[in-house]
Amino acid sequence: MKRSAVLAIRHYHLDPANGRPDYWVWSLTPPEGLGAEFFEVRPATSGELTPLYELPARIAELRRTGADSAALEETVRACADWITRTGLRGIAHRLQVLAPVVVEFQLPDELRDLEMFPWELGLVDGLPLSLHQVVFVRGVRLHASRADEAPPPPHLRVLALFSLPRTKRPVDLGAHRTVLRAELLDLAAGGREGSVPMELRTRQFGVSRGTLSGMLREPGGWDVIHVVAHGLPGSLALEHADGTADEVGTRDLLRLLAPARGRTRLLFLSACWSGSRVADEDNGGTSGQDAALTSLAASVAERLGCAVVAMRFPVSTDFARAVAVRMYRYLLRLGHELPQALNNAVVDSVTDARLAERRTPLFGAATPMLFGAAARTLRLPGRPMTRGPLRGVPVRAVGGLPERPRSFVGRLREMTAASAALAPGSGLTGAVVHGPEGMGATTCASLLAHDHREAFDVILWHPRPTPREAAGRPGADPFEDLLTNLTVQMPGIGVPSPLPHWKELIDKSMRHRLRLLLVLDAADRAIGLDPRFADLIEQFAGADGPSRILLTSRSELPGVAAALPRMELRALDVRDLTQIIHTLPRLGALARSRRNRVLMDKVLRRTHGRPGLLMDAESNAGTVRELENWIREH
Image 1 (cartoon, rainbow, N blue to C red):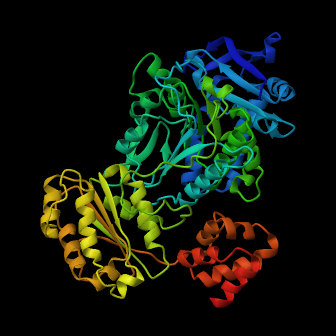
Image 2 (image 1 turned 90 degrees about the vertical axis):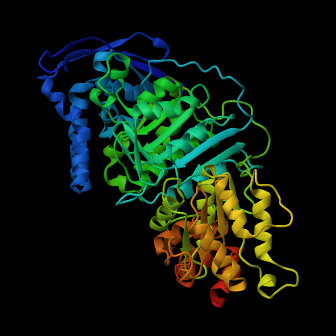
Image 3 (image 1 turned 180 degrees about the horizontal axis):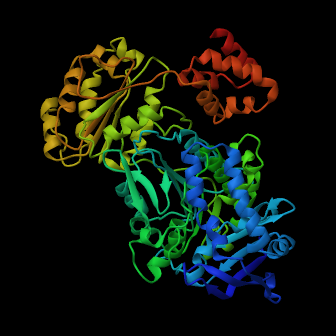
């Protein structure tokens, strides 16, 4: 959007009884500054503004009581009617004529609450302004310095965090992470027009203050930070060391994000209420500038000098994911400026028949918000890029850790429990993830290892026994290979000769306070081949220190390390399997054609809820005929 306008208030009066405005004059400066237009607003009483001040609380109450979508939309529409009739008066029609246009607020500090009202709901021809390509940008006050200490890398660096603390009613963000990651990787694909060299880091479990701080202090910094989390007005829910929820308030979050100042260009807060107004007392009762901050997103935009996308109200994870994926597509592939990219994403999502927000178009249109002076004209990547894609960074020395799983959906209860067991303050020494063949225990362990890598000095992945090892290959000794790898990977312990007894090795690692994550894939098979694995597991699980052990198995390993919690993997439901299919290159391509619907139904039935069988179908889905052969064989 090249066109921009300024909506300001120069004259106003506050009701002495409650400090709210009972009179003001809008000044609308159209694009190119071609003379300001003035619109006087005189509510009958200052009480007319009460529904707008109380709209967030009313929305929260409706959601808490499980009100239907009609009640939600009716509440929002009442505010939209007042905004159209009184609050904006003729401005709504004027902005619709100017569209597409970015509208910047310039309001006195005493009227900053007005900036947070959902002016997007001004109705023209029955549609809100946001669906007429009118984008409001809030928090345009402080112009933070953009002077970088070092030039940014010649590729885009993107950090996506998905905070999943243990709660009574956790929200499964697996599909959100999988779809968003797949879209970003697709945007970074080389050899295609519009591809962007991108370094992408995602983390779904173990998002604590410490891990966030460590990631933000990496020398390269981050162009884009995308945070998906539970939220309340003025706070985000990260994770404590024991995996429980850590409510991080605005002040603490600003301190955590301080290293991103001058480097990060876009922060996407996909969290409920992240754009919602915060009362002054929520900012510690301070005076002056701190007391004037009106939302978590506004605070971040002003202090960091970056663009911020946030959510005014709670929305479904499907809607939040759809808006994010579409916005990045418009921003990175089609080269749109951020206001246009976000607006297009909102319009696409509000009118998407597959999303629940189609039934509440006003609510959906008013939820995404844009903050910060930098947001008005932001383009990404915005600097020369290197040739070819850079899809991620190599994991630091982690032995044979498999690549991060691309398609991971479901398993929320099991994964949050296992993640909490691996956390530094859990009081546990590890976990056992088990289930029948094909249930995805290895995939779960791989994702857990990747998401916890900042918590450990070394991650050592011991692979499942090969058929040759199971058959007793001469000279093969997997247990001795594991001990050798341990001595090689352990910093400060060295490589003794001859190899010490494994108990001595573990004791020495504990004395050195080595933070080691040892992952034994298919531990049941390893124990069946060599009983020493069972003894090592017992010793490791009973040791006191920061190290952890993670086991995968087809059984719950009865009689082995009873103190380790067990997470049993059961069959995935059809919805989860369908989400995985749409992230896979072969099956996903076939599933997008309606004529293959019966074929996909057969695949779902043949997998019996086992993601491993789905991956086997994917490897045999080069053509429809190949997939039909796989179906007949299963």
